[in-house]
Length: 124
Image 1: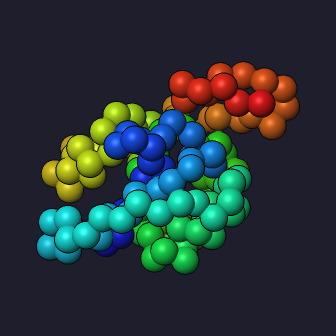
Image 2: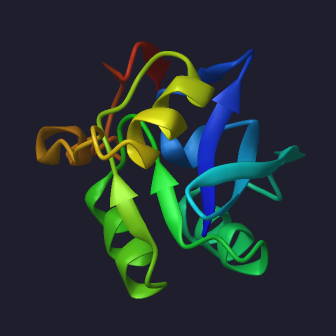
């Protein structure tokens, strides 16, 4: 299993499509074998989803994620756990322990018209 988390300063970055980095976790037999922080190769859900696919990711843990990004992630056969905040490493441990659940209310960050706040940051 390979897990990706939009990442900044040890925390889950609040908005999937604008994350400056992702942290990748390689999992085997329920244990973290390797972690790597990687700069994103662009922004927007299409570029980020392609970046995750190239990295061999099969599971995504994130904060807010728009409907278009959710569709792109599902189309790439990547399992999604949205609505997560806080420490990235703890989120992975919660997933491995079977305690992390998907929050469907976190997938409605539609911000292509006008300005607003989503996921704790200002979008425009």
